[in-house]
Image 1 (cartoon, rainbow, N blue to C red):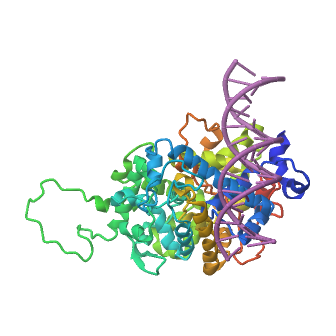
Image 2: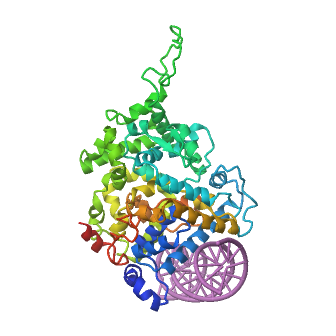
Image 3: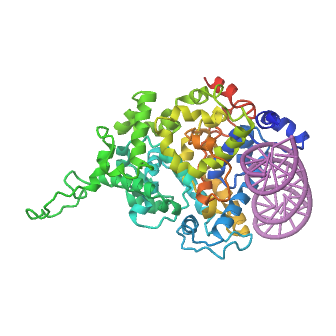
Length: 511
DNA sequence: TTGTGTTTTATTGCCTCC
DNA sequence: GGAGGCAATAAAACACAA
């Protein structure tokens, strides 16, 4: 039994055909698939092909997996959203896209009326998003949760996963954002501020609204961003206010807008504002933590980025290619794999990884995230030891991508026909924008900043009693196959056999 | 250890679109 | 007609309780 999980992957490709027996995909494979799925619900033929190469599965398997994955999402959404359709998460999901569409009759038909999300929109976002300057993209990370701040309903199906990932790796310097701008798909340059996300349509997914802590973080982030446009003495740049009458305000009002500044200020570990919910360190906190961790883990490298915007421009990608503050390289990640209880070390763990690395991860991605960074990164990282280093190479872009992801309830499929049609169109679109854009970009993207959630390992199977929320499901899997080279047919960085025991071997190879 | 329930994977059939 | 996708189904793998 043991071998089935860890070893089967080796023969996955080779023996899969001859051996009809069902074989579980390795956690690494699953993560890669999930990650890819986050950005491409409907991968093109080429994508599948490359992906199959990457993870050592057949295209058929890939297709099947994606198919089932979509069904899974759909089913989950149906189960959750249909009953009442009023649950927090479901409701959020429903309005997630802000398309103004309401949830249809719950559970109606196979056409997934759950939402009216236009896959094209989603895909297109990804597409044009890919074109965004990295810096811009990075900015997005911080703005994902700002939807609530702006007071607008988030309608974007921003996947919690993606956003979470982004949150994770917010090593970008806030200063960057100052100059960063969003390029809309129309080519319009949207100023970076709270409204920018509107332009792009990226808003925190609905469920985020329920995440008070996150909101808090989002608020902080927005403030920080907005703060860029504020002068030291208050008014927005370019806006002159008449001087207040003397004593107009007895007690000095703290300019919350400027707080963000403080947040970014290395000198201050925590903005007073962000100290909110303990459980959910604010975004800013994350930044700090990350910074701290990065600093401790990787020297001043990260700090440099943070403190020096100029670096950001050049290293935007790098920033993201260094999940977890550069991640310490995969070797580090896998370092402990041998000694630690790896996923493959025991059946249960394996299962866990299979499930929780992927899904469990989602469950508490946000909640747990903070703890991950909280000085436990190193220890927690090896939870992913089963992940192929290749995969771990997490492409930053992925994170940056607008993960449309929230497919869960929010993104589930529209109508079959519609979706299909859209799918086709999406494909075309992708081709237009650069065929393998998505997949190629993944090449750079494997970021293992996946939430090394220990909880995942600890987490048990999701029980019915546990709220299975769509958004939960959508947690991100950061593990992604690495398409080292973005050029088509480029040599993958992935070891010849991804399916091989990803743990020790691959890790060592990386080193 | 066994039984039960859940999840995941594989297969098949049908439908839609080009 | 072929390709791609969805849904249904079966079966394996696994988790958990008794």
